[in-house]
Image (cartoon, rainbow, N blue to C red; front, side, top):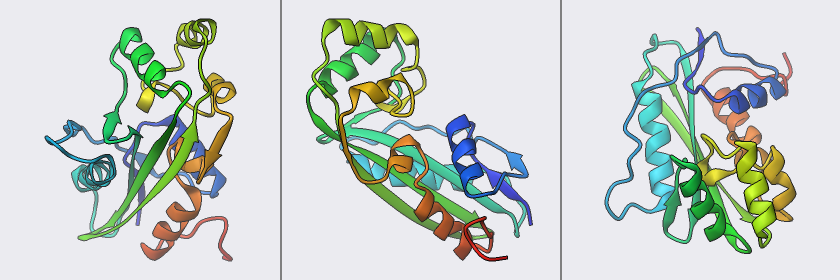
Length: 192
């Protein structure tokens, strides 16, 4: 049995290390992550995590872990900004408001898939022009859903969360450990 991480995210790799496990291989799947017309953020996030898990090539006894993190402002899905202008647009939309960060996790072993999604609430402070431009200049927004990462410099812009901090970062550890256990993979948090 091999453990395969279907993600190129260094944050997910670091979070797995907190569970005392490291993947035998990393195989980020290449799938179309375009939301369907009218698709809501939570079902979208769950669908993408499942499609990622289904797309990873693995043996019948291998355990595959995939996840997707989506930032939702109401019904609007804020994906990874493609430019600094789009990152600024996202951050201005989030400024001074609460939003949801949804992380869906899918674990596959053979033909079975176990899934869980975790929804956290996040409030971003009202951003001044200086704060907005300062953050954009760090480049930390690149490749991040919603245009920010709470574990980086943007942490100073987030005065309040409710939910799973590790879920906001990209992999809710309690839920992930449980899914891996059900799939037959032990973590450091379990007795040997």
